[in-house]
Image (cartoon, rainbow, N blue to C red; front, top):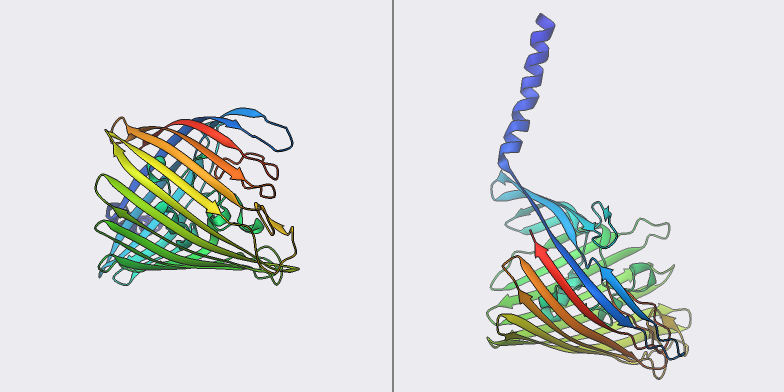
Length: 359
């Protein structure tokens, strides 16, 4: 009997803080289902001109996030976000922004796997009405968004990360992130950004370095700035970017700039974007290539985009759009999010009809 009483007392002692935790923690289920029908024409210079019809999931996701007040202005935060494949079924548990952290008067610190401050530039000029996803994503040229970190891209989630976001003061905030890729060559990524969002003006500036990510003794650098201004019925945005890669024969560099317009059209929203990736330059040998970017003449590319988004309710949207990549003879950029095999000099274009529901 004595042993049973002791066991019951011990169980009660452990159960009390668990009950207190359950009562003080706020947990929310959230997500978005975003699917589209796509018709893509390859327009390859080699004469191959396939037309492909696809269904895509476009960053559909489901997540759990929560907070617990720790007192003294300190809050514990967590999030587990997973991708959902509407088109073919399946998901990746915790494959999207997933972290544990603390938020307080000095800002927020998170540890886990998530996007970097450099990616936050995208929403300043990007296709916000169509949720910066699908082949309509405006990071096909900007940041070489189609590419992963191992092949020279700058628009990707960073594993093994620690990130600090400052409090927002008069519309200003700053972010720092470090990612240790935990590889044999001690590869790492550093990203920093500063942002302003107040009234009609939004602006951002960011820098990111990939240290030994593509290989030993190789550093890749990206610098970007963007701004947008709302005139009420319409908002205009602009972006600039400079990329620099180390190669065995020298540096490979590229400039990019883009312009966007977001305008009300009845109940819906029209979005238009033009971006230009210049020829690859630097001291690298002619023909040196990192994904879509190459050194030499006729290595530039243009991205044209037009979309319309119509809300059926506060939680459900319909959208339609057109996008085209005009690669010059020696360029090979392709769509982001849902890439399409593009030969050097190819000029892929696509039409999209999609729907999204938030919950």
